[in-house]
Structures are given as C-alpha cells and as structure tokens.
Amino acid sequence: MKRLYSEASKVSSLPLVRKISPSTDRIFTEEEKAGFLASQRIALNAAKEVSQLAQEGWTEKQAAILFDTVLKDYGVKAYFHFPFVWFGDRTRFDGVKKYANFAPSNRVLQPGEIVIYDVAPIYKGYVSDIGYTTSFGENPELEKARAFLKDLRKKIVELFLASHKGGEVWATIDALIRQAGYDNIHSKYPFSVLGHRVHRDLSESMAGIKLWNFGWQSAWSLASRGLFGQLLSEGHKGSMIGLWAVEPHIGGKDFGAKFEEILVIEPDRVYWLESEVVW
Amino acid sequence: MHEVRIESHTERRVFRGLSTGWLESGNRQGPILLFLHGFPDGPQIWDKQAEAFAKDFHIVRPYARGVYPSDPAPNISRYGTDGFALDCLSILDEIDPARSRPIVCLGHDLGAAHAWHLSGLLGNRLKALVIFNGASLAQMFYRYRSSPKQLLKSWYIAFMQLPAVPEVFFAAGSLLPEVGGLSLKKVGASFNQYRAFAKEFPKKVTGIKRLSKPTLVLWGKADPYLNPPTLDEFERFASDVQIRILEGGHWIYVEKAQEVNALLKKFFDQIGVLNEKTLQ
Image (cartoon, rainbow over all chains, first blue to last red; front, side, top):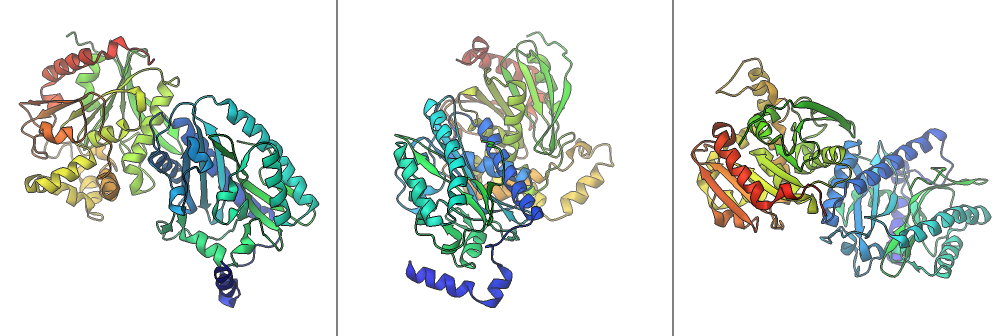
C-alpha cells in the first residue's frame, strides 16, 4: 500500500500529469456544479426507472445490463464505474471476499428483497456517483434504514461544517452507524471509502476498457491526482475542499442500504449538490 | 373459429427520448398477446392473428426499433435484444401498470430472438412463448457450430454487417414499390438489428438459462433462411417445448393463417391462459 501511494504520488507530481489532471482541491464554479448535477440526476433517474421495470426472476447481471441501456438512452457514453446491482443479502456484501465478487452476479431477485443500484456515469465529461436503495415490494426494514440515512445525510453536513477533517468525520459516521445498531458496510469497500472526489473533463473514449467494473478513467483520474487524497477513507488527511461523492452504507441483519450523492465542501459552506432528498 | 375484424390503432410514446410505437387492439381486459415481428416486416404482418384472437386477448404489436413510428436508435447496440426488451417492458407497463395480466410472447424471425430474450425478463408474467421460424442468438450459435448448411443460408447476415452498403441498398429499395415481393419502404433503419446482434453475439450465446415456460414452435418447412428445427435442438433451450412443422415457407402464419390460428387456439386452451385472466 505504501508502495502504491508512493508511485501514485510520483505520477501525480509530473508537470504533464498536473496539466491533464488538474487539482480538484478547489471551489468549483456554478457552471461546473451544474454539469455535475446534470450527471447525477441522469444517474439517479435511470436507477429509479430500471428499478420500476424490474421483475421477479431478474438476475443482478440482467438488471445491470438494462441499467446500462437506460443510461445510454439518456446519453451516457462512458463510466467512472459501470453499473453495480446487488440483491438481498448481497446488499451488505455478505460473501464478498475479493474485488471481482462486487460485480453483478447471477443472484435472482425475490419479492420483498432490498436492491441497491450504484453507478458512476461520465456525462459530458462530468462524473457523478449515485447509490439508490429500494425494495422489490414492501420492506419495513428499508423504511427504517432510509429514515436513519436521511438523518445521517443532515449530520454529514453538520460534521463537515464543524471539521473539514475527513478522517475525523469518517470515524464519527462509523460510530453513529454502530450506535444505531447497524454495521458499517462502506468499511468493506476498497480502501474502506466513505466517499471519493469527483472530477470533470473525463474522457468518454475507449469506453469499453474496464477492470473489476471500473472504467479506465477512474484509475487514471484518481491515480494521476495522488490517489489517497482523492479518497475519503478512515485515515484521510489533507484538504476536503471540493466535490465529493459521499456514500454511507449501513447493514442490517440480512440487508444493506446506502445513498450516494455529491457533497460540496467550500471553506464557509457545506451542502449537498441536490438540495432535497430525491431517493 | 370466428374471425372478427377489429380495428387496431397505433399508440406512440416517448420512452427515454425515443419514440416507440405499437399497434393495439382486442380485449383490453384479456391476457396479453405480444407479437414481435421480424425483418423486413412491420407489425401489420400479424393482422390475421390479431383479428382471430381480438375477442379474448389484448393484442399488442410493437414496431421494431427503426421501423416508423419507432425512432431509429442513437447507436447500433440499441437495436439489440436488451434495448428492445427495455422498449417492450416499457410498453407492457404502460398498458398493464398493475402487472396483473398474463403474457404470451410470440416472435417471428428476428422477432423470435427478441421474444426469447424478453421471455427471460418477464418472470411470472410470462405464460408461454410461441416461436415462428426463428431462434434465439444462443440457438443460432448452436446451429452455426453444428450445420454448415445453416451458415450458408445465413449469408445475408454477413451482407448486413458491411459498412454503408445496406444503407444504400435499403434507401434505393424504398423508392421501389416492391423488391422480390418485399416492400423495403418500411424497413427504415431496422436492418441495424443484424449489426446489433453480431455485437451481442459473444455475450448472449453461453450461460443461457433454459426457459421453463410452455413453448410452442410453429415452423414452415420450406424456409430458405433457416433449417427446420428438431426437438433435440429446442430442448437445449426450453424444457417444455412442442414443435409443429407445417407445409409452407418462412412466413407460415401469413401463408397458412387458418391452420396456424387453430394450432394457437389449441395451445392457448392447453395452457389455460384464458382461465387466468389475472395473475395470482
């Protein structure tokens, strides 16, 4: 890991790399924020649309393919990461032991199951990353989880206003989740990320090149900027100014639930790019 | 069987920026018969079946992507089985938002490939599948591997992959009333389905789940494009299948409409679809 960080830092400090991948540790203009918001809204609308079309018996793979088809209808040509869809207990990553296990599987959708749709499209160069949790039929556990996540959403803004230190906020969110009786499922993500920076001017070319469901653009855009500063992980240090896709993911007995949206962190202001809760 | 002339009307909706059209007729409370036409046809090719079953069934006949009034797709992949499945799912949710009525999917030619794929996405809403002179992508892959004769019969699929040539051919053809008995005017951009299928092929031919719903195959024996099927072949793809090979050609349901309609009625009675007007 230290080696990886060291190599990423070397790459990101090269002058040409800095020119191609400028720092995102800054205040974004209103026009830029509108571009990110458009990308996020398309992603979330597509998730809702495919969830409404879902039928009993679909596999995660089938759902992910149709999710991709809907997104392409809306003009998405490339991805930071391709669609993930998880059903039932896979929403809390039970049985996930390696990166490849996160990918959509042949798991079949059953009535009443919780479903997470997660995608990070690149739309006109702007990356967004959304997580949308729903259920296929009524599920009272999801309603409770959603209520908690809505409170957490408000709390995240308060925490970042009080402290711009990413590692501290990560630890507080972790404690809040556990106090509420849930498991911290985002700690199972690569690098245990609670979130990551989002970038603009990402290429939409060679869109089919991917590794573990991530487009080549994600590896480049993160590594070319030093990698770890781009990730809101437990040990995050450094500036938090900029735009972040924040994704608290909680786990109940046999399910997981999350939301993921872009958070704007400026020196005097912290706010969600989408002001109202739309999930 | 009493054939009643029923008026169809064209419905058109914009789903995700793409205009999608279908013909609708029949009994709006009945089980749904979803007819998927092939190439180079339009949904009117099913008129004799639409008339025959209008009294008891809700008849829905989508226009393939690229056949007016269904818009051409923004990219080739969108003509494939996933894109058209999305269109059909959107149409079905439009006409049966409660998802309470059973569906029988019927497909011919390229429409058969679409019908196979859609059947895997309808869950318990699917009551049965009916195939006329057509096959799924997985089944075509099986045929190409096992029959050089089938490979040769499919020469036109290679023609459709050429850049620009099919576009010029079909544009020129649309100026003529008929070419070889076919009207090319209504083809639109739908020949791109062949290109989309070629792109999808590697991903759609292995790991396919066998369909467990009742499947009826009606096949015109003298088909210049497709070898006659065998039970052994179809049973690789469906566990409850029956095949009837009829005297006739590729468009058997037009040539022998009365005979085909009688077989369809018998099949519908056998599976009891009319006893199940709403899903449990």
